[in-house]
Image 1 (spheres, rainbow, N blue to C red):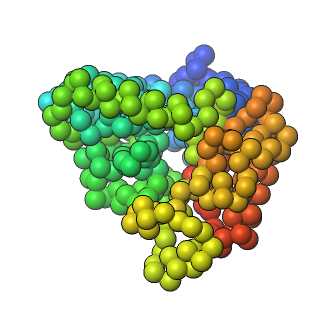
Image 2 (image 1 turned 90 degrees about the horizontal axis):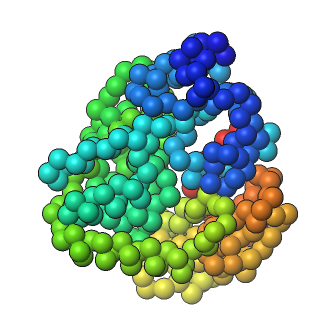
Length: 319
């Protein structure tokens, strides 16, 4: 396996590579193998090799939404480094490894609106599609026309409907054989100056509402979706939720964690951010175990206090 990977990737093959170098959390032990794929063909070969050798594999984008185990990963980490995009009229085609924020800025500068909000996303287009990433009231699904995905060595074209987008969810998440190769976005004409101003506003809002400077994986939990009227009534009896939450049928996880009095809670060198309850930050030398203990504490406290079961948005690697 090692020699086969070496023949394809050369110096881009890393052996016992610390995952802390590749995740925004700056956490994680060594991956047995890690490769950066720069073409569709390389991705196909890497996945095929892993399957032929019955070696577990994990496809990683920017590492923004990943918590890697302290013990590392006894398999192959495939890091997507396909980063080309093309703007043709109102249609944008972007490789899976393109950073969402970079594409947001490029589309705004091209006078296209509908993706400028993604300046607030820390990850890649592939990751954004997989998890239907969103922020500030927008979601990836609203801009996606279609996706090219790899499945069992074949390239599939998937429409927006095929992707079965849900809240922080898509068909890609539920089929481990599906890997996003590229996404095609359909945007609308917009005013460049207005779009740039929107970007400035979003960045300013992010600066004041989210922790800056510390290593984190972004939002740890999905916001809680209110199931039905009975669920709404049950929650109202325990929490003073706002009319906006009622209308959206969604309760922000960070707000609930704040209500539970957990903002600023620290275990080891990991801390639930004092600025935003849905962020856990690495204060310098945190371990994945520290983070896992905080995740468990938040879930247990919120469940016991308010009857709300928080679900993780972060991906686990090597656990």
